[in-house]
Amino acid sequence: MMIEETKCSIHDAFCLAKNLIRYNSIVYDGGSTEISCAIAVEVVADKHPGYAIRAFADALDSFVIPDGTC
Image 1: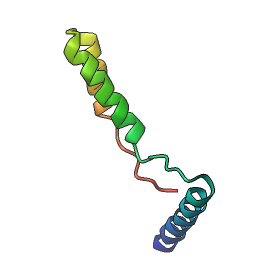
Image 2: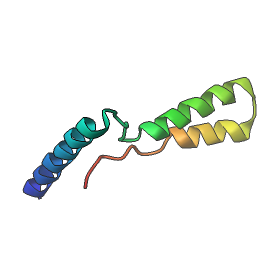
Image 3: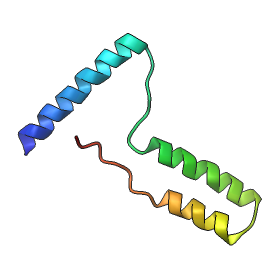
Image 4: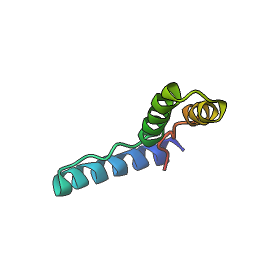
């Protein structure tokens, strides 16, 4: 199991380096999209009082962040 995870991590690192050289940009991963959405909805929820939007913001905030396993 540990060897497979190591191989997966090395593969991911090589893919990242290849894509960074090829495209010269970075796309964030690891739950960053979910966190960004949760923050944006919380900002709107603070401006518009109401139970439904606050519940939606809380639900987004409680998502489990992916651990990046292959």
